Length: 100
Length: 384
Image (cartoon, rainbow over all chains, first blue to last red; front, side, top):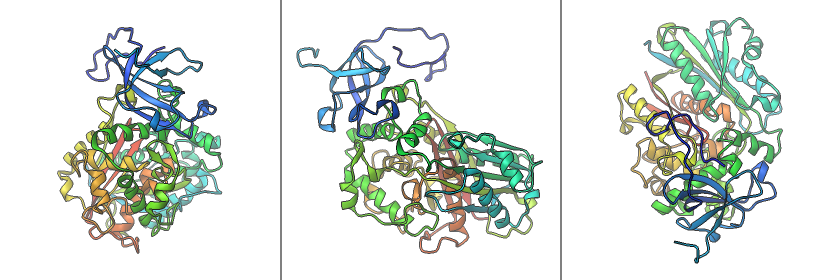
C-alpha cells in the first residue's frame, strides 16, 4: 500500500526520495459522505472519502465503509488504517480506549 | 507579440445533443468563422478540445472537423486538459497568433456524454482525477470538491444557504440564456430539499453532465482591418498547474493553480482585480465559485460565500459573476466549457445577451479549471 507516487518532491522539486513507513493512526482533516458512488464502489454507498493526517507526519486519502452519514464522523476524529477488502486505503474510527 | 483579438464566437444550446461532438464542433466552428466575417480558408491552425472523445469511439477529430469545413490541408491538434481543455486550446491559439505563426486560428471545443448513463458519465469524469490515489479510494468528481467544501466549511463556517445563493443566482442567469442547459429559476426551498450527493454538496450544488459545443476565432489585429464585430482584445492568456491530489496539497482551502494563473494574468495585462467589470468563473460546484472568487483575488479568503449571499455577484450587483449561468446552470460540456465562457463575454460586449446584460462590459475575466485544480487557465479581455 503506498500513499503517493513521484520521483521528486512536489513542494521543493528535490529528487532522490526514499520510501518511509507511515503510522497506521491519524486524524481526519476533511471528508465527504458519498451517496452517489464511483463505479468501483457501487455496492458501498453511502461511505466516506477521507483525508487523514497521520501521527508522525504524512497525509493520505482513503475511505471508510462504516460512515453512512455526516453525523457519523467529524473533522479531527481519530481513525486507524485497516487492511480492507478493496484495493483502496481503508480506515475505521478508533475506539476511545485506543485513542492516545 | 502582436495584439490579438477574439473576432468571432458561436455556441449551440448546451444539454443533450442528438448529433456527434464532431458534427456539433464543425457546425459551431463554421458559425464562428462566418461571425468573424472570414472564410474557413483564412484559418491557419485549428485547436480542438474533445477530452472524452473516446466515449464516442473517436480520437484525432481535428482533421475530421477541418475536412467538414472544406480545409483538410489546415493543421490541427487536439488538446486535453480535462475541464480546461478548450481554454488550453484558446491559449495555444493565442500563442500562435500573437507569435506570428498564424494570422487567424480556430478554437473549438465539443463534448458528448449524454448518451451514457449517470454511472458511466461519472466514471468518465473521475478519470481526470488521480486514479491510483483518489478514484481507487472511492472519490468521485463531486466527492473531491465536497472534500474541499468540508475543509472550507470547517474553517469559515459556510452555511447551506450561502452555497444555495450561488446556485439560485446562476440558475436565474441561465434562465435568460438561450445557450443554457437549465433555463429555469430555482428557489431556496428547492435547493435545500435536494438530496445530498456528496456531503455537504447537494444535487443543486452540482453542475449537470451536458453535451455542447463552442467555437472562437482568434486573429491578429493587423490581419483584421475591418472587424465585423466588436473584438475582444486578449489582454492576458495565462495557465498554471498545481498538485492534484488531496493528500499532497499544501492546503485544502483553495486552488493554488487559480492563484498562480491569476497572478500571471494580471501581471500580463498590467491590471488589478478592481479593473475587471464582470467574470465567468469555473463553478462546477457552488463551492468552486467561492474558491475561484477568493483565489482570483476578488474577495479576501473566507468571505466570498457571504458576499454572494448578499447579492454582490448578481447580474446587477457590484461584480457580476457568471451572467451566462455558469457551469452550474448553463451547463458543463467539459471540452466546450472554457470556450463557451468566452462566447458569453463576446455576446455581452456585442450586445447579444438581451435580458442578461451586465451593467459594464469594458473588461472581463474568464477562469477555467482542469478537474480539481491540476490545471487552470485565466484570460483577461477588454474592448478596443
